[in-house]
Length: 140
Image (cartoon, rainbow, N blue to C red; front, side):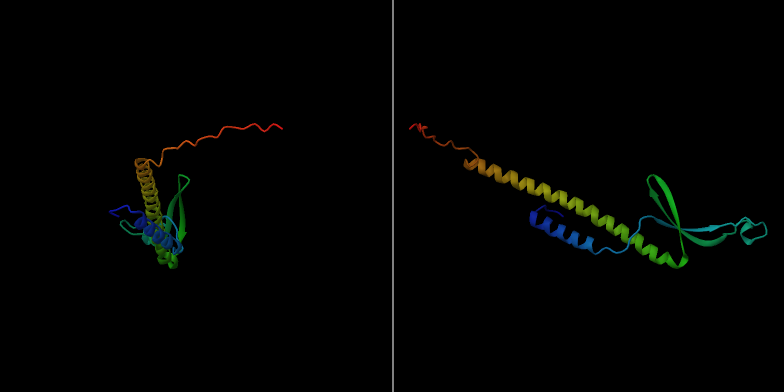
């Protein structure tokens, strides 16, 4: 956004919240297609230049600093692709939501600074002293 007006940022934040509530099944990671040799000397996969058996599909992702791999059945490959794409969309939405929220907070701070500066110019920020009445004793 070119401008950081509070109404525009608030509107965009509401749009992002709505988009976030519309997310579907998702999963992080990368889908990898593999061909492997089985190790039998007489198999076609043992020939030089052969692709091997496959494809087999796996989903890899990092968990606590370690790469985790999960085998994905061939019939679930397209569904997994959609879930990965949805995760990427979710990440993009949350990234923009945080950035927009931060800009909105900054705009509100600036608006508060401007309001307090205007009040100071008018003398509204000066604390007026109240005249105190003398204390009267209440002796009977």
